[in-house]
Length: 426
Image (cartoon, rainbow, N blue to C red; front, side, top):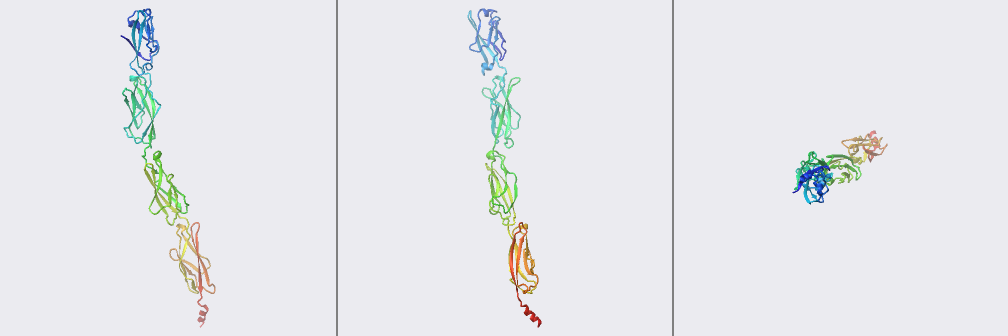
């Protein structure tokens, strides 16, 4: 029948375990005379016998974790051997656990990658903390630093070891918060409890949940009609809050109504350039729709309105509608020519003034819009001048001024002046 002794681990060396003589029913001094010694059975030499007094003492401070690890109960067996006469006594020494270890996680940081589409209630297993103490001195529960998205639950494995799981309470949004950092704490059941922590870093993995958005819904620009081929008209820009390919935007141009349009867009940069030379007189205004599409097919759009600015690139035109090549002399006011002028430019570029050279017996009379009549200012006299070259100059008011000239030749016809006078005399 073994004699059992029990004490907490980490008890200081020199501690009196028992008075062995008394427990074995021997007289004081009998241990010495009978040559008592301790046989350690290959265990650590933890005990020491003071044969004089019959006391069993601790020789070394015992460490339950080093001696027994996870084995429970932690019992070491010894024999007390008396030489003469020979006698054996079995002694069992039990070491009880004290809370001398802190819970410890395998890593100082854990990385979790969680898709932002993860539903509340989703569970993410986490690595457990180790604590070599046993029973209630081992890890009992886990907590996580206060946060909006997760709580932690403590679960037991079949061997009763506790491990943590992270539970999603509220959906994640990478665009709002791409990364979260939580502190996970493991607590043991000591009084007071000891604890250990690790950092849980959560990387929110992007899903394509954002459509591209243009910085402006309308881009209004003015472009001179004489802009060169490939001139930059405007750069449109759309942003997509998603990451990586989900946030890559391709631009395309959708024609508005009407015929082909002289513009082209760079699908990567959003630069709209001229691909045909513009003509204000043909088309002075364009609108088109630009669409930005991400790799997942989500899109956004904007409108580009382009006002073509008139450039003075048309000279006035003069059209004669009737012309008299000869005028009888001495006739009262006579019509020499009727003509119209036109200039398709707008504003001052299309406003015109008409004139003839000074010192001629002719007048320009505006009749109705852009029509003029060239008339004689007074009766003409063939003897003083039989032929006139009249140069009509039409000039617009643009910058630079563009001018058209047209020359008319007018004969003065004889109505036999002398013959007339002859009759007059008679």
